[in-house]
Image (cartoon, rainbow, N blue to C red; front, top):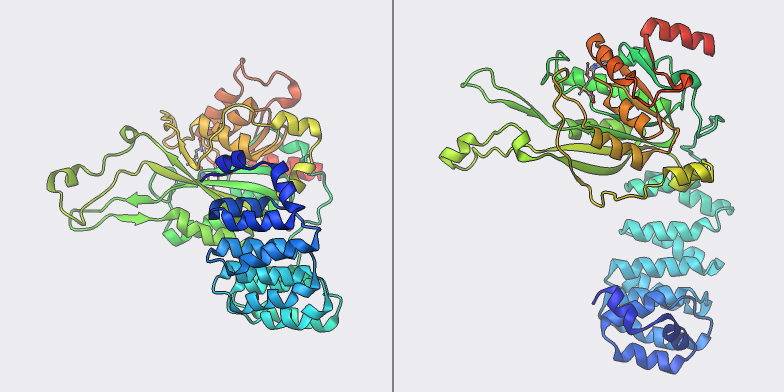
Length: 471
Ligand SMILES: C[S@@+](CC[C@H](N)C(=O)[O-])C[C@H]1O[C@@H](n2cnc3c(N)ncnc32)[C@H](O)[C@@H]1O
């Protein structure tokens, strides 16, 4: 039964009256089906009345692990040390990891020195979730040098989340920035600027933490004419260098959205096979290692008629192994610059008015599958559809932010940024694409009416001179 049906069957008032009547609560929990019991246990809140322990204790032998774990959770809210042995028994013996974890959490919530040896023992448990709860309980006593010593040993634990907590809580490792600049501002000389030149060279002169959002589609290895690399490894090293710099220039906790897809390099003759390169999967570990935290994967789906047909052969022969699906998707991998701060911290760096203006009040995409037709351009063979840029900018930035595309092509991201009341910073090495951008971005009917917002097109040498003057 779904939650809204259950809510209609029993309202808040009825749940509150059960809370204050131990007998009624007891018979209610015995009579109802599992769905209703779970619903009431989730809504019960803190039970003040000591008698209410009995109906909950009665549920600890229930076959349903969710009911057992919710009963423990509600008992834990009472902060009653006489329940310690019950929690310890369930932490040791229950066959469900959900119940064991909840029991260890309950022990920790007692915040009582009696729990210390029990929690220390649980640090060697096989289930990392149980260990995590034991750590949580012990952190309350982390001023005690013995406990600190025990916890610091867990830095050698195989589980990555445990190591991360120990690093942060015991070893004081911080991913927070020491930059004192205002989060919602950026260096004025980057505003609406297009640098024609190599991105790696250009980024050397961009100050730390200048950018609010990067969205880019890098060259597709050697699949298109605009880029030639000696090897796939050289290509990946190049992207690694660029994205390390993007990481440095990105503000604390802000986003980087990377559009790539596996590409195919055609065979040289019928005697050879073509080769497919899984670009997003090969770049991902490099990004995580340099300090980008993986947030989401969005699949951009195109109409089948718009992509190259690869299954004409299969249509004829229908033999297994020779199947080749038409590739109608590309990936948008969403990363955040790793920080200890929560997203709420980022939002709170903006004025109430800016947050209000940035809200997405119209229809929005609810899934990670974005159906958008590709854009074909006679000037450039791989441009973003404007709609793709619009969505990324709206969902991952605020008005007046600085949006960056290191591989700008004909500057689609810049156009979208301006239309959405943001600013852009773009780099593109080929003059023919930068010239095309000039036509687009300086159109009379464009929104660049005020002088200060006029886009600047600048060669890399002049950019370096400009930066040296400003810093
Ligand atoms: C896939 S396209 C991006 C197209 C862009 N999203 C658009 O909507 O027009 C990649 C672009 O990166 C540019 N590029 C390749 N290597 C570069 C480098 N080292 N520095 C700057 N731009 C580069 C290419 O010239 C190409 O225009």
